[in-house]
Every structure is written in C-alpha cells, then in structure tokens.
Length: 67
Image (cartoon, rainbow, N blue to C red; front, side):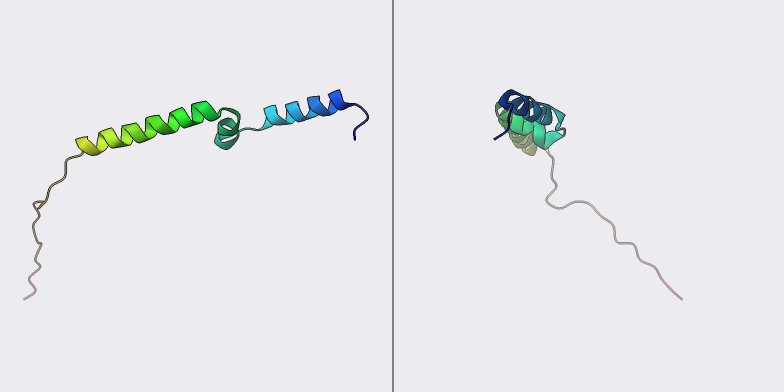
C-alpha cells in the first residue's frame, strides 16, 4: 500500500482528468452519453420518414455506336 493514501487519490483524480476523447467523456458522463444516443436514434427514425425514395427512378441508357 502507498505510504500516503491521499497522494494516491490525488494522482488517480488527476489521471482521470487528463483523459480526453469521446470514450473518456462517455465513461465520465453515462447519463449524458445515453441521452445523446437516444437523441441520435430519434433523429434517425425521424429522418427515415422524410427521405424520398423512388421505386422506379428515371434513367437513360447511353449507347455508343461504332461504325
């Protein structure tokens, strides 16, 4: 065991704060990460209803005639 537990605790806390990036943020903020996920899924489901899709799109075949 470390001779000074409070120094070990401070070292661990500084290490936690030094972590950066989206995974570290999500690990430190699980509620906000889940809320962000719910918003992304809801936005995706909303956009699925707004996307227009043609069953038979118009297209032309390009022909090249070699004589």
